[in-house]
Length: 317
Image 1: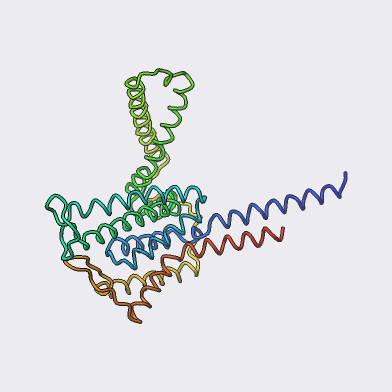
Image 2 (image 1 turned 60 degrees about the vertical axis):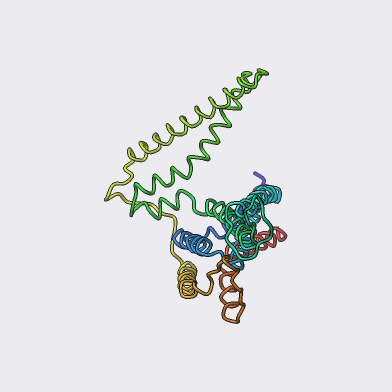
């Protein structure tokens, strides 16, 4: 037996294990926090984002949401999403003034309806709100997975937890079934016909089959969970999550930020009609905006730190 080969194999295995371990640590990033902290963080972000149309807060959470999304996806994916939501923003910006005519500054008349500057800015703000909310929902779906939802709600409301997780996975499951059925039908020449009506009829039929298959899989999953004893009162639960000291610090910090936001809600509130509210940036308001910016950039900064750490460890290998 060649002991030198054994030592070389051991060193290669150790090097490979370190690469995999460090990459897994990088892929975790902000997800390393306790599910309760993650859930409360996204709940706080959604409450702040949906409670006011303050342009500073909209800009803060738009930039932080897109930044976090870009760190978790490829540049091409991020660019395609931005182009799509840019079209949505333009559509909302132009649609709001057509149906909402409140405001003191009239720009012009269209079919005897006044197009006001205030309604234009309101449309821009609502468009940014929709885009920011969409990106934060995408980030939420990556961090709050089904196992974390089952961990948080499994002991309190097990029925609500199982229905919530199945609802979240229903649309992706339906899309996967549609792609599988469509690719299978293409191989047997289902789309070989030149008739547009027949192709449209086949497309609708595939959608119907994929939807029914997804519903059947959902109810099969519910029956499987019940057969395994899910939802019983005295059933024990296995969990890999532990509440560490940094989880406690982060949770306390989030609670403090939530209380500060509620106490300063009137100062942060912003209205666009009948005239635009003056945006004052005092020292207190600038400090509050900076604190809220730190909340929005918290997961992105953690992901950047993990990325730098991974690059540094990779250069030492």
